[in-house]
Amino acid sequence: MSSAPSRPPNSPALGHVVVVGAGIVGLATAWFLQEYGVEVTVVDREGIAAGASWGNAGWLSPGIVTPLAEPSVLRYGLKSFFDPAAALYIPPSIDPRLWRFLTRFAMHCTMKQWKRSMEAYVEVDRQALSAFDDLANGGVTSATIDAPLMVAFEHAQQANGLRHELNLIRQAGQHVDVDELSRAEAGTLMPQISDRIELVLKLNGQRYVDPGEYVNSLADSVVARGGTIRTGMCAHTIGRDSSGIRVALKGADPVRGDAVVVATGSWLNDLAPSLGVRMRVQSGRGYSFSVSTDQPVPAPIYVPAARVACTPYRGGMRVGGSMEFRSVDAPLDPNRVATIVKAVKPVLSGVDWESISDVWVGSRPVTADSRPLIGATKVSGVFVAGGHGMFGMTLGAVTGKLLAEQMITGNQPAALGAFGPLR
Image (tube, rainbow, N blue to C red; front, side):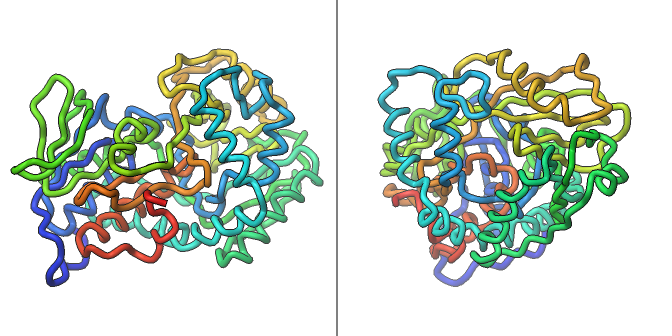
């Protein structure tokens, strides 16, 4: 084990913890609990990294972890309302829960609310990468790769919005190291950037991973350190009995622990309301696929105009995008993939767009106020960790580290103060 703090005197007696959810957040929480000597059992309805932890872009990019709810998103959303070709798509629906979420989300799309939430993110952003270093030092073998994030603009003036946002991020207290590159300068670093790109903002100090490989490596480490992972187990109720906290599983015997962590991503609503968590998460579905490239991709690329993220992936490139407010279990819509290709194809070079494979759709759990839900619930000994939106990979390790600290010490870390799930 790596050098975690020892348990403080009079800390909660946690011998065994059940973690519901085998994505990056749940597994990281289990791993950091093991640092304190806690026995862990992880259960998941499908399998390891079966949800957004597999198909995401794999960015570890605390430099751009910012609240999703902000004025420009509201303007864009209204402009693209019901447009199936838009990056943000809200299909026609009479679902009252969706409309309640959208109404609350719109209420948070103010600069005052954005600044408040951005200030809340600063400390977890600061600790995000060091938590991955802790995992590496403790035996997680899958690499986190240092690389800048290359933000590409077809027209130089399009960068003004990001420049403004970066200034606001700095004002909130978070340092972001940025270089501005011309097309010629960027082209020497990134052969995939086409001649149509006029300007690139190079965000230094970021990283990326192969997300599926990384989460499976994390799971292997949890098991190697004595943990148990049970897949194909869907939790449907959580409650106390004489033996502790009981997690009832569909089609299997219940599992019990001294504490329980619910980290089920976009399925959080299935369990959280019974725990006193009033804020629901909404499924913000994203799409991704793999393509071959003529040359290796040196670093992640973001094209804000298309809202498309590209990442080096197994000798080629993973391309991802879209924010689609649909049911978490809705089927994949191939038209959304075609929309992503159409949007990004003109600004990337050396990509074989006929080689598309690994097409995926997954749901990212979005909260109305753009802040995750991390911490204790109304049920003693039961905690939740979710609602990270598009930043679950970046914040997965630090979430697990800080939540494990809270569970062991009984005290909420200051960095989690704005993320309490009972707000």
